Image (tube, rainbow, N blue to C red):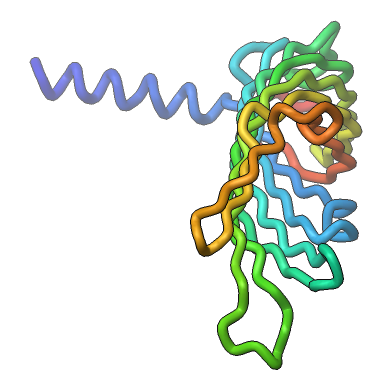
Length: 190
C-alpha cells in the first residue's frame, strides 16, 4: 500500500514538473552598474508567477574623498499577476516585491593595511510593473520597473557606530529596474 502511494505521488510530481514553466533570466544592463542579477520565475497558474532572484553588487564609490568597493549579496522575491497572457506567464504584469541585501564596503587605500570596513544591510518592499515577451523559440525579453521603500537601510562601521537612513525621505526609496534576457523551460509551446 505504501509503495503504491509513494509511486502514485512520484508519478504525479513528475507530471507536474514536466509541464511546469520556469523562466530563467539575467539582467545584462545591471553589469554596467556593477551588479549581476540572475532570476528564475515559476508559473503558478496561467496568469500568476513567482520569481526569486539572486544578485551580487561589486560597485565602487567615493565618500568624503575616500574610495570604497562594495561587495554585497542580495535576494529577491516577486509575485506577478499577468493581464491577458497569451502563452503562460507573459505580457503585461503587476506585482509586489521584497528585497534583502547585505554586504561590506571596504576602503580602497593600499597605503593603509587596516582598511576601514562598513557593513550595510537593506530590506525593501515595493510595487513592480513590467512587460515580458516570449519568442517561438522560448527566448525571453523583459522590461520592468519597481519602486518601493527601504524598511531597513543601515550602515555600521568597525566601531559599532550605526547610521539608519530608512527614515530619511528620498534616501529610503528603493528602485528596481530591469532589462533582462532569458530562456523559458517547460510549459506550453507556441
